[in-house]
Each structure stands twice: as C-alpha cells, then as structure tokens.
Length: 396
Image (cartoon, rainbow, N blue to C red; front, side, top):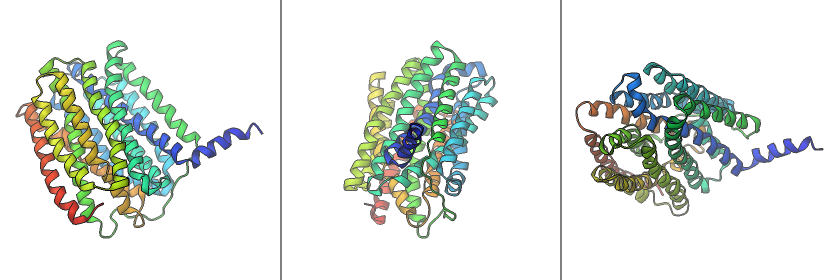
C-alpha cells in the first residue's frame, strides 16, 4: 500500500493545473537565470578573451538567433511527441551549455555555449508554454501567462545577482557549474512526473485568416524583446562606463527591472482576463516604455537610473502580457498550442536577436546614448501604430 503512495502523488501532480504551472515556472526560471549569469560577468571578464564591447552583442545575439531558428520546429515537434520529452531534453541541453561556459577559454567557446543554450530555450519555452495553455482555463490564461513571465523576470533578477556574487567570491568556473547542476535536477524532476501531454498529428503554422493579426502581435513582441535585447548587453557596459558600477551593483540595477516585471506581469494578465483593454495595455505600454528608456539615459545618478529602469519593467510588461493569450486564441480551434508558442517564441527571439546586433553596429559609430534613444523612438512608433491596428482588429 505504501508503495502506491509515490505513484498517487505523481498522478495528482500530473492532473493539477497548478502543479503544471509550478513545473513550467521552474523550467522558465532556470533558463532565464542562466541567461542572466553572463550579464554582470562579461564586462569584467572580456579583457581575458581579448575582445571589445561590440562582441558582447554578438554573444548575446547568438542565443536569440538559435531561439529564432528552432522555436517553430520545437513547437511542432512537441505536438508530435508531447510536451514533457521536449522539456526534459531542453533542460539537459541547458545544463550542457552552462557547463561549456564554465570551461570556455576563447570567445569561440562562448559562442558555441550560447548557441546550445538558445536551442535548449527553443525546446523548453515552446513546449512549456504550450503545456501551460493545454492545461489552463482560457479565461485565466492571461494571468497564468503573466505568472510564467514573472518567472522570466525572477530569473533575470537572480541571474545577474548570482552571477556577480559567484564570480566575485568563487570564480568563473563555479559561476556556471552550480547552475548546470540545478538545471539537471529540474530536468530530472520533470521526467519523474507523468505530466499530461498533448499530441497532435497535424498542426498549422499559419491558420487561415491569421496573417494580419499575427503580424500585429509580432510587431508588439519584437518591439518589447528588442528593447530587452538592447538593455541586457549594453546597459551594464553603460553603467560601468558612466558610473564605474561593479558587477554586483549592475545586478542590483537589473533587479529593479525584474522586480517591476514580477509585480506587473500577473497584474496585467488579470486585468486583461477580466476587462480586456489590450489597446490601452499594449499601445500605452509601448509609448511609456519609450519615455522610461529616455529617462534612464537622462538620470544623473544610479538611484534615479534604477527608478527609471523599474518604470521600464512595468510598461514593457503591460505591453507584452496581453499578446500571449491573443496568440493562443488565434490558434485555438484552428491549429495547435505548440505551433502557437513556437511562433510566439520566434517573434520574441527576432527582437532579442535584432537588438544586440543592431546595437553592435551602432556602438561602433555612435555613443551608448544613441542606441537607447533609437530604441525609444522605435517603441514610440510601435505604440502609435498598434493603437490603430488593435482598433481595426477589435481585440478585447
């Protein structure tokens, strides 16, 4: 009788939407925590590789490029084989990539490790978000996706802080080997629980009549992720150059961005689920994000920078969260949730890749201020455009 208890517990976890949410949150959190480890470390460690600031954008951009290339195939594959195998494989690949970082001695090693990390993220994000959508009441999907995105923010805040502290006190190798072991443990935990999975023999990447609404969703997601793609690699360098900020201090500034997202994303999801208002959330969020980014560059000290960064985290969250249930709704009944979140991740990674690579081009010709001001202009233009488009599409 006692032998049946572990099996019953696993079955209860597998059948519980709340337990599925916890598993997905852990997986996404781990991916983003490891993504953020390099943020405070690279400005200090780059001289040992003999590279300049422009290479930072390339290292960060490789992750997004792999996410861009593999998200749709991984989403479609999760429809064929189920969500859990893709999540487990993704977590083990993440552990491998993190271990590669620990033993990197050249910039080429870093690029290879970042590429493997991007492939693992394509698997875990596409399958994990699809699993969440499979097991969630559509009327609560905005809130659940907001909670999942809060795991992104929490990983973002923990990653730079942990990366900075581990690097200062334990050295480069431990900064990555410890998280690699944690990623392996989470992958094994997902493997041990028989999570309900969805298989679909046929799924469409572009359901009929979806091109225009998907293009609108893509514009929003690319604008938001492109902003993160600029902020993640270049704000640490700007803070180091303008304020002589240490890795630990840079991590604390990024903590303000993440804490704002942790608070704002579930709240934005609840507002959308109950009242709609995507036009105000999305367009207003984009416009105010542009203003917040200008404030970041105008702030005369680190405290005011952190306040402006906090505001940026709130406004970007308001713009992004409603898009996730909107994309799910486009595919519900016409295609598959694997394809839906594969294409969502493709949108997100497109911006995440464009930001660092565009920044690498701009930083070679102009100042860091020019990069952030150009990003502000893009956000403002996207906000004005989406106001008109959302009205035409009649999104709730």
